[in-house]
Structures are given as C-alpha cells and as structure tokens.
Length: 225
Ligand code: 6PG
Image (cartoon, rainbow, N blue to C red; front, side, top):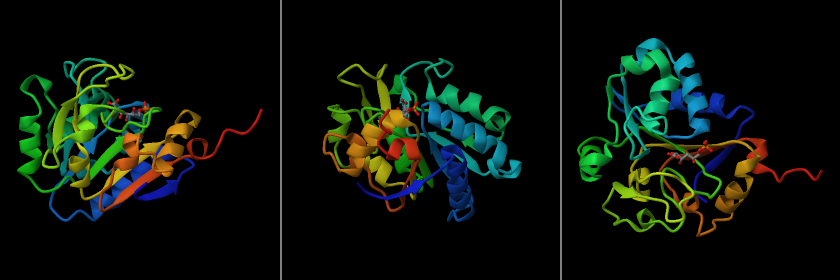
C-alpha cells in the first residue's frame, strides 16, 4: 500500500484536523476540495461544517471524486449528500463543480486539467476494497494514464448506478489525498489494502501526500466471541 496510516479514535474528527492543516498550508488563494460519497463521508462533512471558521468556506471550491449518474437532488447523489451534510455552509462556498454524467466525463476531465491540482481529495473505502468509483474488475482501473476522469460502473452490480470517477491518475494529481475508513465491516478491505492485494482497487492509489485515517475496528481483526 502507499501512504501512511493514521489510527484514529474518531475518524471524522481526525478528518477535520487533516482538512484544517491542508487548508492553512494551501499554496494558492483558494482551496480545491474533492468530496466523496458514503456514510463515513457524511459524518465527516457534518463535523467539517461545524468546525471550520465560516470565512474559510468562501475560499473553498467544491469538486467530487466520484458521482452516481442520477439527478443532483436524488437521494443517491453524492452532490445531495454533501449539500445535506454541509448544511448552510454549502451556500457560502466559493464555487461548486458537480459531476454531470449527462455530458460525459470529458468536460470534467478538462475542467481539472485546466486548473491547478486539487488541494485535497477525500476518498472512502468500500467493503469490496473499491475507492471513489474504482470498482474491482471495472474498466476505469485500466483508464489511459492521461485520463483524470472517466465514466465507470461496477461489473458485479454490487454498487448501484453508472458512475463518473477520478482515475488513479486523477487521484495522484492531487496535492494531498485522505482516505477515511471506519468500522469492522472494512477490516477485510483494509487488510487487503495493507497487503497490497492487486485485486483491491484502493491498494493502488498513490499521491505525493496520502493519509489513511483508520479506526481500530477497521484495522484490527475482530476479537473472538
Ligand atoms: C460512493 C463513494 C464510495 C464510498 C465508499 C465508502 O460514491 O459510493 O464515493 O467510494 O466512499 O463506498 O462508503 P461508506 O462510508 O458508506 O462505507
């Protein structure tokens, strides 16, 4: 695996600390943050909204690391998840750049290519060891090295909806990447990542700065009953 593991009692709280550090050390005037989906991400964003000073949000630009191909107000949309979890601060950010499957991945790929690297990409880890929407056995795992964003879907049908996702190159281009992993349900996936299992998509992510914020339940084997 690449990067370093940060063992956390409270994963969302440690996520906030990492974002705060990345924000205060950003090289430019704005802070480009790419959001994830999932329940852990929801809890992270609820804490982030409560913790960051209100003025900071006016310098934050929101992007997504992946999205389901559903309307932005659909309950399954990662855009809707962020809007709900961030609450009132969502309306105060400098800019919002949702992924729009209806126009394909090219515009988002061009958007990212046309600007400085994302300051921080937030990712989760699925029980099948996917991250973003890089699913086991899916075409996006073999995207051309030049592509930052592609369409994708889960060939096993475990994860619903067609998707748009950062590729490994899209993730690696970020100034920093943080993966949040919590709960015993992620223990097998986290073990596969640590072992560098080549069939675990999340094991292949890399970036100049990559931190895995993991709780004890995901890291340690479940205690025998
Ligand atoms: C998605 C997410 C996905 C998520 C993981 C973890 O769109 O489904 O981006 O990659 O981060 O599946 O989700 P949980 O935190 O809900 O386990």
